[in-house]
Length: 242
Image (cartoon, rainbow, N blue to C red; front, side):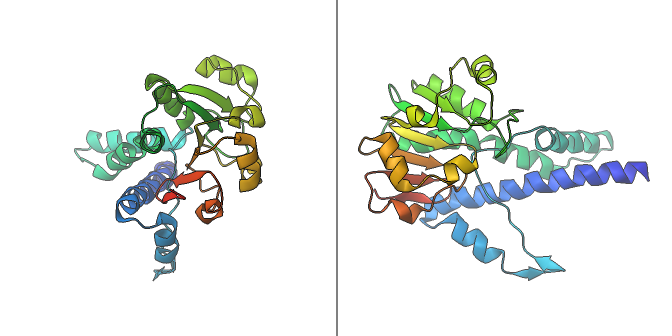
């Protein structure tokens, strides 16, 4: 029926947002336990359950776009209309809403404070390999970094300059200029341009000691930083090369 078809679409996005929230809370607890969330999730996903294996998605810097932000609230409000207090859509929204602030917290903890820090933001689009900035978590990260006293450089190979300027008030930079002398680099979007960077290239572009890479999209392997001057801090992955 049309109602069932429409509900199926809502159920998809309800599940995705809730699954990401589970991954994010696995990441938060992994940081406290001193384990790598990706090891935990990869191992958990080997368990057969029903017709398929368990399928926990990836944690990260935050959820963007249109559907995952509105559909869980649509479901929660729909439940209210029928006297149902649906907990899971509200829970997923609360958890996922916290992740941009967590990215900023990771940077602040590693730098010992953000006031006067030079921060490079890699990626402004909410989705890799697109120019889509709808509800991008990068906007929240940028606002919070500014509020905590950071000086920012933003780069994104897909989003037009005028869009970034109009939405953030910051004139975007090319990748090498954004990275130069940065105290911290926050990876917010998993564009292939960033995945193709070697750690050696990253170190060369930054060209300063003791910078921290805050990886919100699992772009780099933490072990690659062992022989560099850079520290790696990934969501759910702890700190490498302290």
